[in-house]
Length: 92
Image (cartoon, one colour):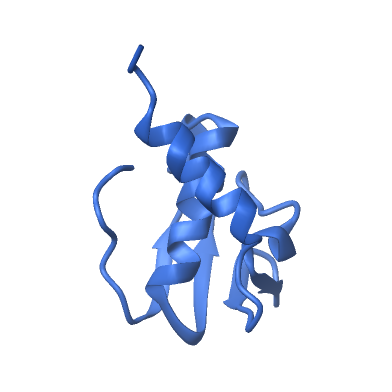
């Protein structure tokens, strides 16, 4: 989760993976997926892990399981809060 994600993808397929993560980690992952996609790129997820609030993450819902990268982007505060929380995990 802490590593940089590659950029300029037309499509990211993440099926039956994020169901094993905490909500906090899922939020960070979806925000970083948005950043990794080209404009109008697509994210495909499995049926067990729909983005219930896809606009929060900067995605427009197309058909079941497919989300198109929107122009607005993720809620910035939410994105940076998630990154900060993940980077401080385990530190005291």
